[in-house]
Image (cartoon, rainbow, N blue to C red; front, side, top):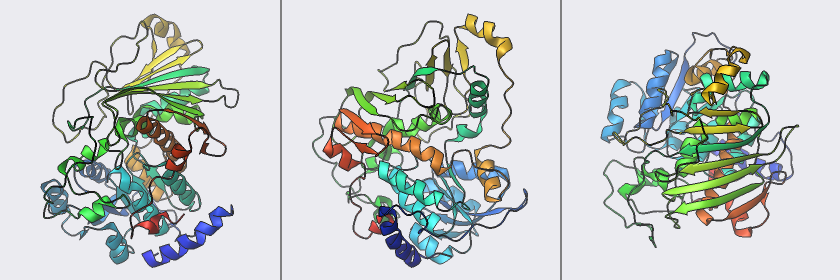
Length: 472
């Protein structure tokens, strides 16, 4: 077992090593050797309410886990009680650091379902402790956090990582690859991505000039651990239970929440990498503290391996629908999209999804595992006999992770794949926050037209006592 003291020592050594370009200074306890398909993975859950409860139930349905530990900053709250009651023998912790110190030798993997701002420190400590890591998307909140996590994972090839964009193990993943291999999807020049559903945005005035005032702290909430690496904020209910998504200090807005469910396959199989330009084209309600109520962002990607340049335009907001091509038809809602804990919300005029434009064809698709279809319908009928057979997924996203922990499969959304997409979104969030155009050099990973934005790639320094995870 790698303790936090060992971790700090390793990190201080590695910070100098990475600065010199060396690649072998981060050492971790190696994973267990290949096991059988029926062997259970000993797992610890960090974040057990709301979305955490959902993924815990998904893991339970595989029949492939043994739950060793539960960790949540709000262990006395109603939304965590169900999981605590279901696993009474699991050790309980409010602080993930204590969980690794006191029970780290009892589990092989962790599943993380905490707010975006805490993904980095928990994932980094888990990797340094020799644990397999499943973490909800986005991988990290800042560009540099994602970079460090990718490097840490690559230096530990015996450890398994998986980011929770579940559609990456469903039909759209296998269809996109099969259609590209068959030449059906080729010469993509533009993609429209849209998420126009209601979100968990509070109703703060967009003329806000300061952060909200502090409120009485719930008695069971470990607020200091919830804040983690971020600068101190007084507790307010509009930071907590999902609403953290709309604050720049804690979340990544609609783009970070849904982008990985809509653009993941296109980004991977078109080998888009990092953009050279990110431009905020429209913002309704722009302010310094929380995400606009509506926004349009243009991402421009260069030519790659003989494939033409691609422009991706992102639309979010109830009143900010994208242009729809002729023959689009009806927007279907994928049944695999997880429900939220926010109750019923009014349906959007256009369900989350994408429109892919090539030189010859136009495709429409939904979110998560939703498959693509050719539009208009007449063109789809003409192409029907040319479409290849699409293989079925051998495992869902949770099974894929657990089978990979046992050495049987490889994960489909490891840090080294999903991390680059997370970085794309972090650049988009920076353009949103600054309401500007950014020019980015993918080779040097620097913003070239805005020194302030370039400094933002690393984010704010961590709070005192939390810098151990950011030594790199």
